[in-house]
Length: 394
Image (cartoon, rainbow, N blue to C red):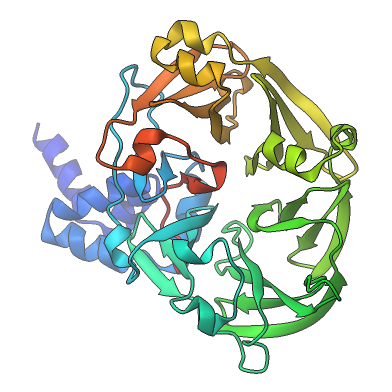
């Protein structure tokens, strides 16, 4: 007994051993352990440096622990069978804005934009409050500095966050801005600027291009070192962050059968990545196609193909919404074991997952809270971000 006590005391008294233990704990657990004693509080408060964040990321699997829905959080806990409640995001009060939108989730960091800016482009002055980088786990936020004065008057099409903690301790923000305008007052000529957290400054890259592809710059995806945007046409663009080069890639050939842009836009229900796989999902009535982009950007293939009528048998309360095809894809979660991969939907008042291999349904939550926005559950995918627990520094 005394030997056990002395061994425990030896571990508790060694900062080096404690740090090695802390490195292997989930970020949320580590934050709770600060309350154990003053020594642990002091030690844990000192170690979340960039190097600690990098090591912690390498030792802990990057699996989403929750979905951020507008300014609410839905926990994801595959070990529990009963639905979990949705609760207000505890970091919402960190942002000095009346409301916000998590525009992009990237390896533990969020690109956060004031929600009233999302639908209209404008200059930095017009946008007013600006955009933030936020780590919801550590509750750290940093406002992105204004762009250089010589370009701040150009309207912004969209920002994109690029952060790969395995390759770098720092992140970049890519800005697509308008330059030229045609006779129809359409901004076709664009340029790209880059903000680096390492230098805390913007850099004008002089990367200019003409956009005639109806690109959607407000829904960026960072995947395998690349920023992707989708387009309502046969071709879209991606930006290689390391090479700082802009290249084109095809949209699914399936799009060629759709004649009207409005029809195509309503069919696209999801565009995001999971575990290095870039996905695009289309919906026609209750039939869903999950496309995956090839690693060489050459083509899309249909990875999964399924219908959702069976959800009505599992959840009778969603039958009316299913009959009206009122279905929203919130996220795709690819797991190490393919049989654990799921798509998360919101239908009516219910949020549920659909297993892509076993075809099993699981209720995750009822939207029974005070938010009209959530209660209606008409959540487009760009209002749903995967939430990763991380010590990444802002």
